[in-house]
Amino acid sequence: MSRLSPRLRAVVDALPLREGMRVIEIGCGPGAAARVVAERVGPAGHVLAVDRSATAIEQAARTGADLIAEGRLSVRRVAAEDLVLRPDEAHYDVAFAVRVGALDGRFPEAGVQALRRLAGALVPGGRVFVDGGDPLRELDLPTTSG
Image (cartoon, rainbow, N blue to C red):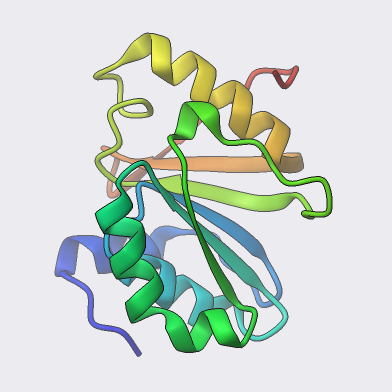
């Protein structure tokens, strides 16, 4: 099991994860939380770890190489507001973000676009969580994707 800071552990523990879920982590950084989530959703689940930083994605790919090889984790360099699923990619059940300006209110215009993109990437009824609650708060998704 990957090691997490107490704060990140509380976030991951608060996520409504189940075996076999598909999860997106927005702003994955070096991928520590994504690795733990991949372990929790098991071999039938999948985590897509995204970050706008090439350095972060390089680190996440390196530290998660075993999970990537098993098909349980994938990494992608993209900003939340630009995320679009690939044509053959199944939708996701849950997305979460920690300290991501587009989703925590620091950049409201980017946040509107990021939530539209997430609405298009999640299954109907999919849920988005961000830090800033106790420890998480859930965001409402727009009713149409874009």
